[in-house]
Image (tube, rainbow, N blue to C red; front, side, top):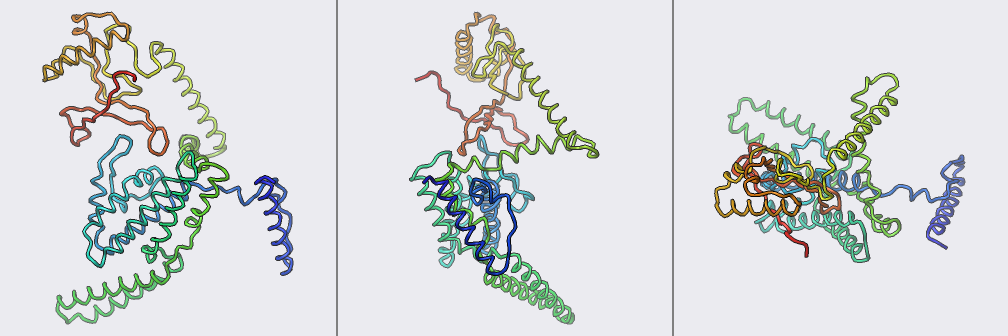
Length: 440
């Protein structure tokens, strides 16, 4: 018996048991179209990395860490280190702290996961003796959850990767109690808000009755009340906190789902979410938002798609001399470009003589001239030194290179060289690159 038949038979047996159980309580069930499908309906929902991990568990972890760091007075240090994370080729520098971002998106969570553990480790350095165990538990719990998220994104798995993913999940459940008091259910949260409101009202009434006391005595009483209220809220959430919510349970099924159906990235709704903007939101905003808006949305999307195809055909016909690597071949010396690679940006036209004159080092100037001549020869362009000096040159300060990132997605890395000029009001940016001069 194959796996499908086995799970199908198990589903039918469970349905019969449930029907008999309901009938014993005089509950009669009607017909359901899903009962007649040749599949196991309980297996139709698949794990969704976007909503289960990125906008689910990792976002929960950020909330727990926010309260945890505030409790131990490390939140300011965490924010300072967070904002000091430098930009990388396919990773933008954080523009704001966790609390300054009003709505976290999947892409922002994915970027954050790459440096969260390092930032947390730096923020919790040099603890007191009483804080050492708690800080280590928080770091280990965060690292285990991030590791589990990274393993779940693999395009292919074997027994070793599945074992590492299961180990990371066990470590997360082992250390997660350090955040127990910071995750309370809706009922506990509402009760806590009501209790806090009552305590604040009681505090204000008592402070009003001390109008004849000194300002210093008044301030001491307010501080004492605030400490009492905060302690009461912590104890209330600690007593009512739990980890009984669906997304933390769904991680237990990742191992089984990967074994049965393959990698989880194929089930992620991230692709559909990104396409939703171009296919639905933008066409809807361009419609008159009345009448048959669905037809308007479809017509607008088809129109933009036709223009995109027309643009591709125009570029293909107008760039007949473009090579497969994305570099523009040069039939003549005129219009020399440094360097045209798939969507280069920030260009500035000048003569090649002016480009050479801008290079202060004599050795680099000669090497640039020699390398340019060699490049033209490799492109079968006949030229001489006099023609090369007089030709026009188009200098690019940034090139965009398509690469595969650590998540297996195709991204565009922008390499910039601004010299002494500032970039967007910030410091000059001159990236280092490795250049392969010949094939092995």
